[in-house]
Image (cartoon, rainbow, N blue to C red):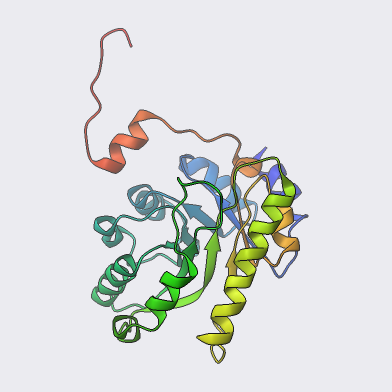
Amino acid sequence: MITENLNIVGATVPSNVTLIAVSKTKPVADLQEAYDAGQRVFGENKALEMRDKHQALPDDIQWHFIGHLQTNKIKYIASFVTLIHSIDSASLLEAVNKEAAKKERIIDCLLQFHIAQEETKFGLDLEEAKQMMESDSFNNMKNIRIVGVMGMATFTDNTNQIRNEFKSLKNIFDFLKDNYFHDKDYFKEISMGMSDDYPIAIEEGATMVRVGSKIFGARNYTINNYCREVSITPIKINNM
């Protein structure tokens, strides 16, 4: 089923757009099936889960971190992560730079922008990004590279609203490109669009789409996933 789903989704994604298979909460066997079908780019949103899967799966996988990243978890992925999509503050970027330096790496990152009409979403606004770009701290960071932007649209059936939110992210990308990265060929990525709205995102300029449920099915989120991430032991209750 995963192989079939991957083929169906892949046929709808142009060759110039990177398909990220969002494999969060899925077992290693599911990722291996997708890998065997030719998929090489996977997205995870928990650092410890990504670390464990990285250790269990082939070395040529590109691992994209797509969730809200806690600074104390960067160390678990700094040695191998391909791209961090979710830089939503200057302090987080500084922390990534610090851990990347320890590993003698340069880690590619995307600036995450808040484009949705939902307060629960994380992300910068344009003024915050401008302040970051113009700061001495940013200009002294040698172990990170900003290669583009990321955003999540509102969870709604209103396709016009979704389209307008994707347009706003494209406009932010264009502004940053013109004003801060005009001579940087590597600043080229726009990560937007998920299972329900990625076709609209592609129409509005996405270079990366993050597709999970249309490939792997519904999310398998259990109390054990949560407990592992926050480093606590779940309580076993009799007859439960």
